[in-house]
Amino acid sequence: MNKNNKITLITGANKGLGKEIARQLGLQGYTVILTSRNADAGEKAKEELVGAGCDAHTVTLDVTNSEDIANLADHLEKTFGKLDILVNNAGIALEWDGKPSNADKVRRTLEVNLVAPYALTEALIPLLEKGDDARIINQSSMLGSIGTAENNWDQVSGFMTVGYSTSKAGLNMLTQIQAKTLADKGILAAAAHPGWVKTDLGTDAAPMEVTEGASTVVELATMPREDFPNGKFIHKGEPLPW
Image 1 (cartoon, rainbow, N blue to C red):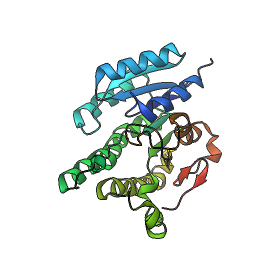
Image 2 (image 1 turned 180 degrees about the horizontal axis):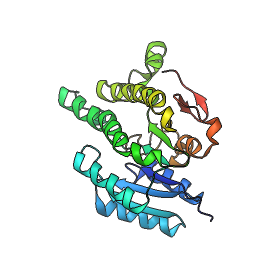
Image 3 (image 1 turned 45 degrees about the horizontal axis):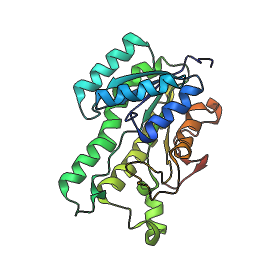
Image 4 (image 1 turned 120 degrees about the horizontal axis):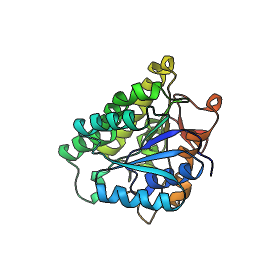
C-alpha cells in the first residue's frame, strides 16, 4: 500500500460507518485518525485497522467538550502539522428509543449533531488551511431534507423526529455556509447521506450493509478536487434536495 500523505480525521469512528470509512480510506493510503469518546474502544478499532494494513491512529474526543476539541487541535498540529479531510461523522438519535420525545432529547441531539461539527470545524480550520486538498464532509441524512419532508411525508414521517431531523437540516445549512465562507481559504465542504445502513442507529432492519453506506463519504474524500460537489448534499454521487 502506498501512503498518499493525506491526513484524515473521522469523528465517532470506533464502530459502524465511521470505522468503515476509516478502513476504506486507510486501505487507499490515507492516514486515518479515529476519534472516540471511549479510549479503549478507539484503541481496539485502531488496532483492527492497523492489522488490516492501514496507517491508523486514535484520539479520545467527546465532540461536545470544548477542552477535548482544543486538545485535539493541539495534538494534530504537533503530530501531523496539517489536516486534509475532516469527516464530521459522530451523531446520535435519542428520540429513536420508542419513548416520547422531549425538549432535553432535542437539545442534546442538536448539541452533538449540529453544534459539535460547527465547533470542531472552527477549531480545525487553521490545520485545514495547511492541507493540500482540504475538504469537510458532514455526515447528514435524507431525514434532514426539508424537500423530502414536504414531498414524501407519507413515506418518511415514521422516521422523522424533531431533534434528529432538525439537527440534520441545520447541518445541511452549516455545510452550505462553510462552502461559501471557506472557499477563499481553499477549503471545500459537502454534506453526505449514507443511506439506511445496518448500524447501531440504523438497526438490522436497514437494507444497506455498512460497506456500502460508507461509499458516499469515501467517494467525496477521494474524487478529484475539480469534481467535488462543493456546497451540495450528496448520496452515491447524486445530489439530494435540501
